[in-house]
Length: 251
Length: 310
Image (tube, rainbow over all chains, first blue to last red; front, side):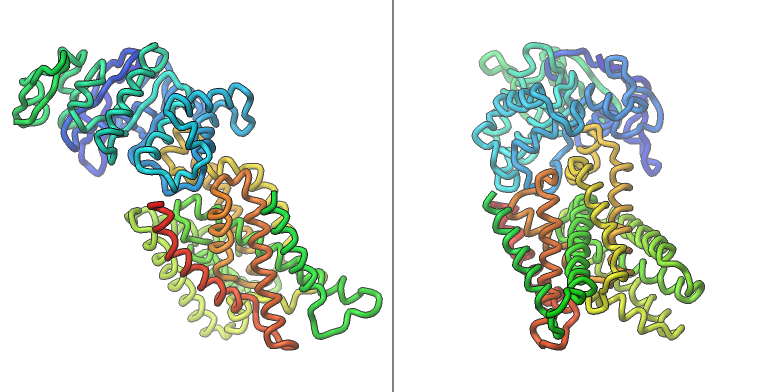
């Protein structure tokens, strides 16, 4: 469980997060949604321990990510930032292998090689393993970075807007993959999403944020109502039902 | 494997030419070889390797392939320190001079990083341009200072690196670069991870600040060692790492030795050319590398976008 207590984040006098408290249960996909500037990414970075809040505390399965040694933290939680890194000439295999670094710190064992292979298979990268990241398409590149984060094999995986710059097919493909991979409950994925329908379609839980606060939090089906969405996004929505799934349409 | 064979063959050929090329005859007991030709060859190899390795480290730290130590103000800041030493304590031992030169290089680079932090990252050309301007300002202060204190000839020797003065007993400090190269090889994975950016590096459990600090100290020491012993050389730190990255990728655990060899070969090649074109007179290696390097740099600039969208 991730336990967030009274988290505030102020930068240059602007309050990005305002006294946020929440608990995220393990298992499945939790989506953070909300309008631009709601504080979703900041909350995600604070949870990961990589951004220090102005005040408040975070516990990841009991571990304090701000005081834990970097290596212990990196085995409890993995974050993939938005649009990561420069054009790297690492191969896909090399990049994904760096996901194992917190485990072996330079001396990979057979277990590490196996974990890399599993991540390559999980994200359909085996055929691209020897390709340089620089030569991949945007969708493939994003998949490679997510596979690196996956290879870290942390109980918690935090993804900051991974669908950015992905076309609909790759976005759907990635969400379906993450959904399938998270069904066994071994990994919990917290994901910042811009597209409400991606959250409606694939997330188990949704946390809705606005102006640095959590406005609503519930199981996806329960949270997605026209009233809640209007309150969060300040714009009217219509909820439709399509093949047993909720679909959100801006009015 | 074939790549390594070709590289070693080319390197061996360069070394042979360097050892044989010169105004004086090598006939006799090999004294000339021992005192002059071998030291000169080794100095070029070590300095080139050091500059190339320093280039890789800087590029990983700022996540920009178009930057190298001489585009971070490091050599200019170092020269300022050396000018001050020359003025205040001219009799200082070489070790003391090295230390001050390295410390000033570090301060210069920290200033550059502070500037870099404020720049938008979407245009890769911006950072090297800022580096050129920043280095230019520091260099101008140095020139003014040297001119006012009548130290211009010192500055000239540092600014235009060359190897004609290298002899046994006058270049051995450069061997420290071999030790630093070994140190960098030990932390090669960490340096590679630096290149993924601060957030991603820390998410992988890297102690980012500590690793970056280690890298910058190594770069500063290499800059000082090369500057004090043989002077400054542009482009080596830019060209060698970029050529190796294009050829063999970015995994430094596998490629650092090639970067070092590439840098050494480049600078030795420049020195050999400088000795050959107006034989028996010499052109400074820094001048040769500036001409060659500028050409390769332009090619890299032209070729960079293609790789990005490849």
